Amino acid sequence: GIEMIIYHGSTQLVKIPEIRKGDTFLDFGPGFYTTTSAEQAERWAKIKMRRENKAIGYLSIYEFDFETALKQAKIRRFHAADIEWLQFVVKNRNGETQDTPCDMHIGPVADDNVYRSIRLFETGVLDADETVKRLKTEVLQDQWTFHTEKILTFVRFVGSKEVRTEE
Image (cartoon, rainbow, N blue to C red; front, side):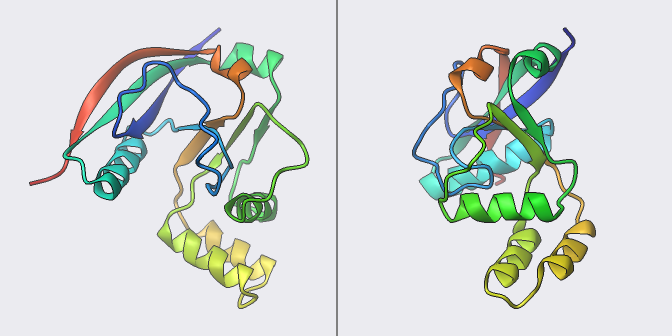
């Protein structure tokens, strides 16, 4: 199959991706988070570096055989920050478990503006339509989240890059 390149940003170099159950309250629930955007992964690394007070982070780079994975695994893809995506993210951020287990979710990654809109939606200030309208104006990067060991078998570590805090 055609290998695509995906990135994971962290304070650790991750040669063997794994599903960590600890990170539950994330957009797509527990899983191994990657993106096709090196910039986005670098941002994630820097956020974690700040949180953990570390000077160096890592961009781990992988090849992902998406074509084969599509045939053999259950993958759900959100093509936009739409109402379905919004409800899914809100559920995960509240730690609710999903009804339909998937091996992977692909979709937009929420930034601070998006989180603000999501909070306004959760507190009833905005309705779903208004929230989705706001989300449409955002240019969002993607996130590719692996939830099962099975789908991680299509991922291969190919290299890494150090991330440092700007002086």
